[in-house]
Image 1 (spheres, rainbow, N blue to C red):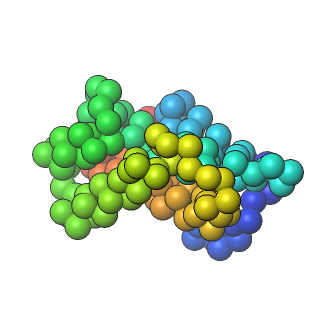
Image 2 (tube, rainbow, N blue to C red; image 1 turned 90 degrees about the vertical axis):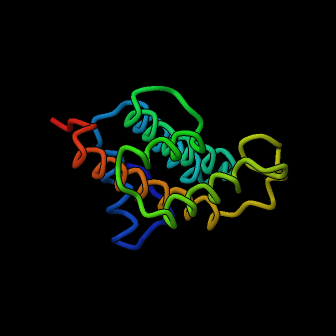
Length: 147
């Protein structure tokens, strides 16, 4: 997307580019914001990059459900509509928990020095991949139209 980031692995770049090419404005906006905050060389904002990445997954789930819900609630409902292995659902619930607990990124103002470029990069890549996975599963189940 014209931004220079510390992401160089082809598979990671591919997942991010795929998530940015989805025709859904909210998902695109969250991932673009995450990428911009990670790519800022002068004052990177890892905390908000992570927050935007997990918010993109939440937006993906809401798109599939057709209603607004927290990521935790949305994942519980989505697994009723599309087949997601319980371990994958549990894993994402735990990642969401990481961003939401008492020291979490989404609620408390965690000290910036505790979060690193590696943390933000991991969340951007994994959230991009998971959103892409959910979109593909939603499309296969007839819940999303990509045309």
